[in-house]
Image (cartoon, rainbow, N blue to C red; front, side, top):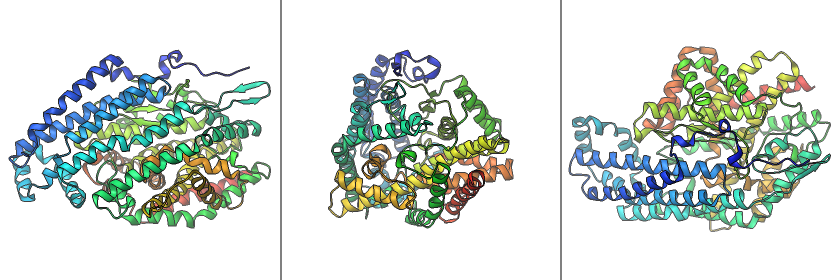
Length: 606
């Protein structure tokens, strides 16, 4: 018996997202691309004139914002299609064209911020008082001032914008190698042949038979190891590209630039990053205890294929089965403490507007994400399996999408995004809320253990894997900034060492395959992104507890946080919700939740 995945065209419509709401066809998309590119010339007449009047400045900013949405829509469509079928050369071409258009827009608009910074603050203030529409940009102007020492001349900014596309090519090369060229040998077991693919490996890694888990893990790792030198080169190129930009702008390090600016101006103190690494290492004994209990529950042996760093640990008990529709209903019930304002648009997106692409098909890339921009649906990409892990993934991505929904509804285009630093708060908040409901309702010990298993999977990724990757990433950037180089052997060796420290001797390690795990994380092509998963889950669990204990008052604070977008700095947005991430306390609370769950695991498994 051979299990094969359907082609993309063979999936039922209800398992796919409503991408037609963006563009009816690739031909319509092409026309939109050409129109957007033709419109870039409209920016040129404003060059050198932004300081003339409030109206001149306002018109230029509004035009730039409009063009960003037009080009962004083109990019979203191409990216969504490429994710669902990376083997289709049409989608690869479209994505390349869309990224090129974004780079050209960046170059065409590069003069704007240097010119804004050249306008005296007193004049800007007078203009904002006289022109209410310009006053909307107040926070943008204030944030821009914090970047003033690092903004170069219009000419240099144009060059940096132009090179953005080729410098991003390292990520595109890694994606092509991983999602289009990489192949994996199937798992043969009991007369069956199971295909190993990005969309199926997660299901195989939680298979009840250890032999299937082992074979799937080895196949997946070996498929990546076949590209280890290529992917080491692309990762090194990506890090060098970011280090070049940080150095060109005058930052002391790549980390300093990443903490200051991600998608927008963040102004995250270095202490937030350092606190995470310190608190994580101090709490490693909690993880060692967890691995010890898990090893005991699994018969005295725990292997690296039982705890894959890119997926869920092998379960002690099997997850109950549930369909996509059942999971949607559970999530809606779990989020009821936020009220109709939250649940109704989420339900509409799940059942009417088709935000989610959840079917499995050939060529579909790995992972899950939420994507879109102001004026589009907050699309969700994932591959569904009938278990609690998929329910958790869906809840997580719905957290992102609902964050986007409220931000885009409440904010003008200039603030209709939000920092990566707070993105993982909303996603983990949903998981925490749904999990709390399931644990309150769980009567059967086996079901309760299954819910805890999903929770440990979540915490394993966010409070074990991601902080370890943050330590790894910092070392890589510092190595490059000292003039060193990254080789596949170094990357494999060092990552294996860091995870071995985290396992505390409780896990039997296949060093080469474990160390290859850096190839599973496209996150490393987004500089210093991974640490924000850990800060996010800590803040999320604290906020979920506040909502459940305080009710409507805390729920309103949380909804206000979701609506803030980029209208405030991310740390300020979290303060609206009631969390201060400059202090160690939220991180300690996060590890406290983990510790209490380990206590319950010990009570259940002995």
